[in-house]
Image 1: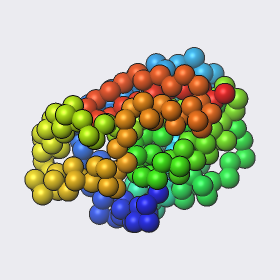
Image 2 (image 1 turned 135 degrees about the vertical axis):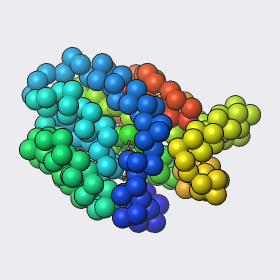
Image 3 (image 1 turned 120 degrees about the vertical axis):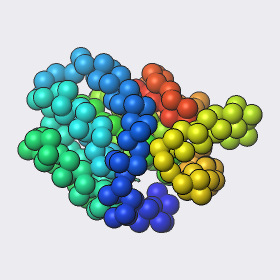
Image 4 (image 1 turned 30 degrees about the horizontal axis):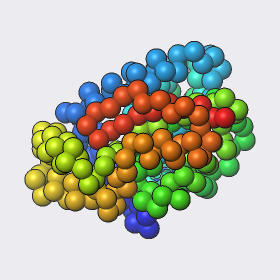
Length: 231
Ligand SMILES: C[S@@+](CC[C@H](N)C(=O)[O-])C[C@H]1O[C@@H](n2cnc3c(N)ncnc32)[C@H](O)[C@@H]1O
């Protein structure tokens, strides 16, 4: 995580996060729906670890779909976690959740999990070695054969393909109602504060961290999602 990361998802961002992206929520809803199919063979007493849950969209979706599952939730931004807890209470799922304020490194689990999610988190770790360590820490919390579902912004920043997708990405962000200056800022963060690497490099990282057969099951513009198994 970069030094400013703890403050990046501050009070203001946390309050507006869900509404801000509501017009393009279909993209993430599709990811969540497909993830439920990926995970549908897991047993009723499954324990899921949600890493970097933000305001909780994947957690809310999984908890509604898998009504008997239990969840341990890791989130380093207090304002984001507060919104997540409010969302969980409103949805009536908070009794199945344990919330941990802090990043993955500060988490000491008292069990091995059947599955972990990391949605739109690891690309904020710009140091490649630290990013591999992030996935290694997830693996350390999983039982043997446990699953990881991760989604990350990825792309080959030096390719013309990247520039073509960037044009569409800009339109997508403008469609949310964001000011052009903010869209420009977000796009300028690629390769600087957002570690844009090629999809194949993410797959190599997952393998290096101890996950086998990373399988790309969903892509929406820069968002790429894999499932893989802890060896
Ligand atoms: C873009 S948000 C995504 C939130 C949610 N997963 C979603 O899909 O909407 C990224 C979140 O990851 C959290 N985060 C960043 N680094 C983290 C780390 N090392 N461990 C756990 N969470 C982290 C941030 O605080 C932020 O809430």
